[in-house]
Length: 96
Image (cartoon, rainbow, N blue to C red; front, top):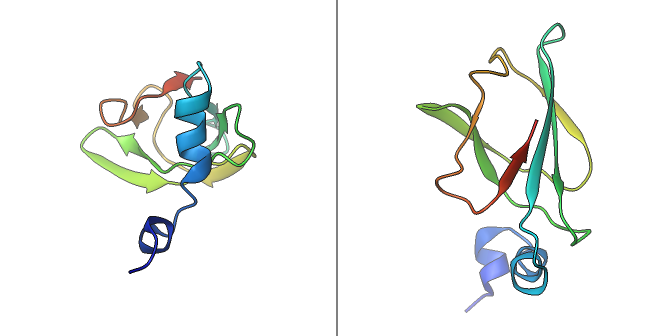
């Protein structure tokens, strides 16, 4: 039987370490450039290798992204006001 990491394809140690060893919960930082139709995102977390998938987008039609602690950018036609993060499924903070 393989490990849970092999089955999920995720490195789970940094996720568990963040939640079990640090008082602060991870914060998803978002920066919108509506003129360029992009959103930049990253995790603010004490664990340097923290990378956890999260559902974002329109409330009824989101998609999963995989932020890390390094900035990433993607195109979006969703405005900052309509861009939602599924905080009901994750114990996280959001910073815009």
